[in-house]
Length: 482
Image 1 (cartoon, rainbow, N blue to C red):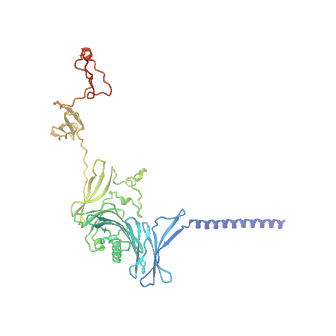
Image 2 (cartoon, helix red, strand yellow):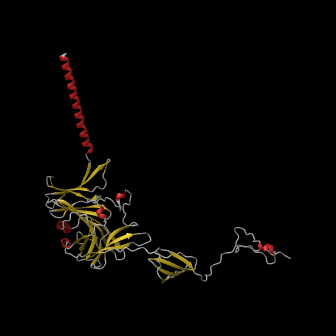
Image 3 (cartoon, helix red, strand yellow):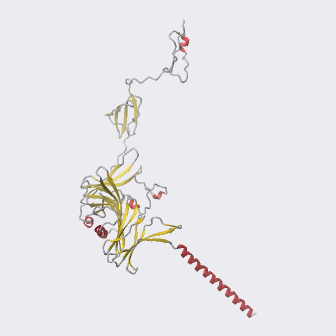
């Protein structure tokens, strides 16, 4: 019994151990399957390796695309630049993020230290990447430039509408700039962009952009700015185009930026920039943007739980903020209100700022609505309109004219004030000779011969006329022969 019981106990213990091992194996397989299924598959397309001028290094650009639903990602913006030695060992590499990449052109070496390549983003949009093979530092620019050939003068006109620059050194610094007359003016003040012809711009252009990015980084640190986002479509330039103004969100506070366009380089221009903080009541769009650039809400009141348009600014009944120069030394911050479709946008001046940095807040007056006289046309009679507004009475004599003529301006005759404050309107017709009106067309009558006489009873009875017979088309009956 004891042996049997002991053997039974041993059998039960072995069975429990086997089940635990099975569960452990299932868990391991499940974890392995999750890892395999969760792994992101990618496709890498590499350019042809280009040797350096001395032949000791090679430069390669990889275009990385993920596999989504069994198909490669379209126009992926992920790139990897690599520098290898003569044995193929990677010595320097850097990941580059672009808005999107359609085509990567063959890379080339600009000198023994810098390599570069260009890529196409979309129509009229391209990008250039400069890579330092010694330090691993990279400079990237993306721009949108339109080229037009003028038939009258047979010249080529270029217009730069967008310019973004990125510095890859330790941390990534990406700057979106305001452009003016073919060049970037703020935050990076650069020279006009050279013509783009597939190949990278000269190395002197890359050095200029790199120096401007480092100067902007020092400007942010000096002014203790951790976040600066420009308000779109708020920039303005004075008549001489020596200075510009733009609204921005500086450290999540509405601000005005005054910058100069006359400087030797970007560092000199940034040293003269003035940051002026405005009242927190200004609801700028950049204040509703997340730090990574995605918008949280475009509606005026996102807490209401109502669905709003994705682009509310500019619709009727809403508003936006802008800057406008009153003269070459004074800039205004205005609130532009879009009221109705029939009215022009209305501007309210909120601030006046001088180039010296003096800021003055303008009080917006609140005016009460004054009732207007009733301008409905009552025939062609002269009417006397009595208006009561603010305790004073005024009589206006207005002569209404036919639609073809232009109405005359009323003549206002002030009278004594009334006791009542209620706004009323009273229209009193005045007797005057009426203008001769066009008589109404008479009913169509039947034409009778001259020798046919009607009796008085028949004359009083109107003649019956066919529905489609008119007086002009009626044909008299032939006269009977005597």
